[in-house]
Length: 426
Image (cartoon, rainbow, N blue to C red):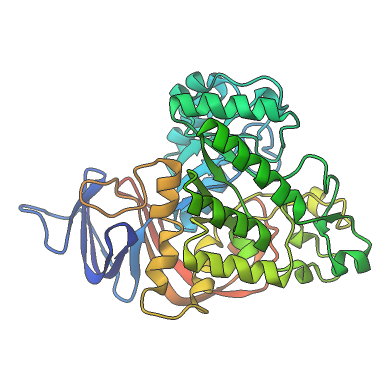
């Protein structure tokens, strides 16, 4: 398959490219930019006039709900949602049922994804057996099966000795440990940000120190072990200040933020809107503003969708009883573009795209997020000015719940190319 994408504004943050030129794809890889290779005869041509042509998005947290939670979503529905949202590479947390703590389960998930031949799926293996925080998994075997890192998902490790040993093991073999910083006890059972709003609504709170105490512990263990850690879905100004200090110190740490936390605050809970229930919870406006500023100054390395499809039975409940999470794969691009609306400068769009392409791929250790010649031909074509309304029927994901229902957002994907094949075209 030879593909010619013509007249598009090619943005490749990895190589500082932002210019109108043609893109040529052959045998599943980028063959050339600008001028066609000798003897190139396209089987298909896509006219990208007025569109942005960028690397396919790399999403660092997307729950596909298989195996075990197929009633919430299936690989078919969520991978269709991914390509419809321009996401070509997905990193999946290990909190499936059963947990991804055995090589056979990882191989089965990878095999299912290969058969569907949509987005590229890269699982995270469980850090401890069953995510119970006691016995370490066989990380070497899980890596051979296809895991790109190790995580506890939403389950904190109670015994810090176990976490230290896990980080020492990971350091020995060069693995990255993915952790969401949350204290196992403070804020346990909380459903909203500890603050005046939660008090008025009578909701149990999760204080910011649940994040900062965990960060202090993680950084001490990093100093002792030398392990490389990626911090998932940071939510607070205080947490970001600690991360900035750790980076300045030289610790091998990266972090991401959920796209929803980039725009929403605890005030968006409104009258107990369960669509606004997240882990970690939406925090104050000060925290939200710090997140936006930290994206600009480089403290935050990546933006993820935190895609967590939830069915009606678990979402249409009183706020405190509803399951946390929202669909995000199809909104990721638009929410990133929404951030650029408040940014100034001609490089706002390339800088924003870097957070969901090259920077995210570097964190995951994947050869993705670039349009360099010879790289895998994972490409998204989108109209940054086209507006679309977030409605249940517009979402391919089986999860239809998002706090952005009814919003009109900018940025519509026109085509998604995965490994040189047009996987989606509007």
